[in-house]
Image 1 (cartoon, one colour):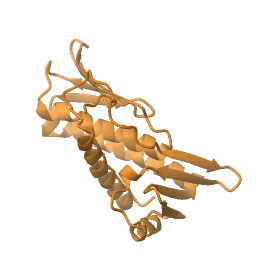
Image 2 (image 1 turned 45 degrees about the vertical axis):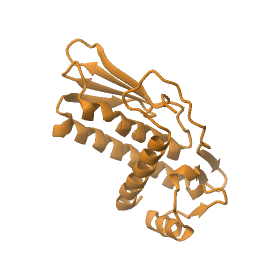
Image 3 (image 1 turned 135 degrees about the vertical axis):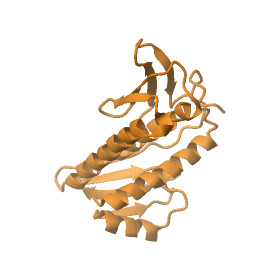
Image 4 (image 1 turned 180 degrees about the vertical axis):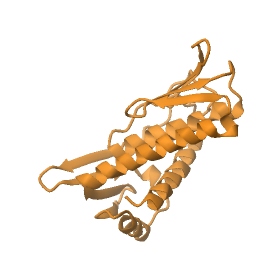
Length: 200
């Protein structure tokens, strides 16, 4: 997988994710609500073992304003068979099973690098460790402080994006991404948030 194109894919997904979150009225400080936003069509995956191909459908809300020409260029740069824009605005990625596995491996590596960068950043100087479960639906952040500052509170959006992107391209859209902040000394939960908690 072309690493430059994968980075562009992350940036594009992040922009779409943030627009989607703003449109749904998401409040990062709220961890007690319920998901009252209208349900978006989920990603889906079809694997043909005989032809060793994967067809991955990405919903239209992650394909805003994209043209077929842009998708053709992206498919060529990514080295996959095709990306086809559908009448409903969604897009179908067609690739080999091996290419899909490599795509997921590259996404996992980008997430790992992103979490390491957060630990080293001055913006999150209180974070001493960041871990995730295998499918990136649970993130645990160990912090030295008993309260989160504003930037730390909004860091949950980054973890939501990581989890949603991985599961989107895995064809297993996650109903919820759980993020928990744990105090380094006491082990107490400092804060917790869930991506399924949205406001109207």
